[in-house]
Image 1 (cartoon, rainbow, N blue to C red):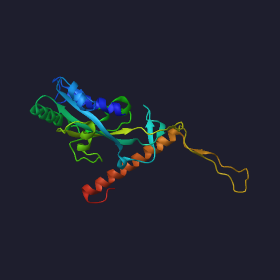
Image 2 (image 1 turned 135 degrees about the horizontal axis):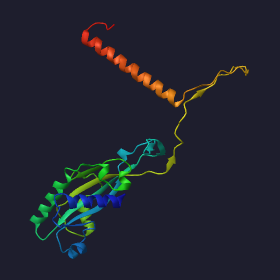
Image 3 (image 1 turned 30 degrees about the vertical axis):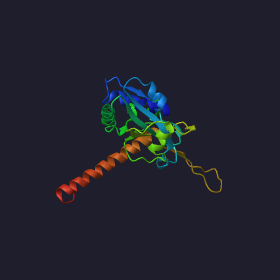
Image 4 (image 1 turned 180 degrees about the vertical axis):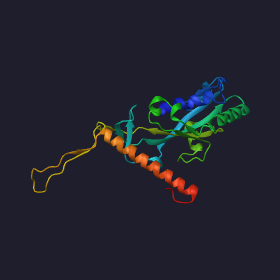
Length: 236
């Protein structure tokens, strides 16, 4: 899941306001050694913190359906994790770095929610959207000064990006086969006698006919109600 979010982020940065600019996008830790090796304008997205978003934790089970809309499996709801990235721009001039950070903001601000259709297959299979927050209030326990101190570098202007991504919870359980026959009822005497009544069963056609009859009755009631409202009297 983490490496897939990395790829999503790289794709966002490469196809947004920076599209066609040939700006390098790096996921390495921006240490002094890395900065010394850099020889081109670069956007660095350093993943510095991973922790579960416990407020999104859910209980119960989720149904997995096939193309026929039949339940084939059941599984626990996914667990959500906050992936915090430190976004920095690296050029020779501070003004150019500020322009790059502005371009990053222009790219990420409109993308507060990534739909499942734009996610890699394993994330898209969950059918969930992924929230993205940029330059918000930092809620992690580590401060930016501590991060830069750990990296051994000097403090730079940066953007704090948080991607909250689902992670599948295991195991999955196979569901039983779908019901194709209606319920059947037999009644016997309490004294155990042999006088059993004939079996009463709901077959698929009977169930469908009953559902259609209920829908027709409901539509008729709604039609009568509309007639009363329009005329102000009783419809005969």
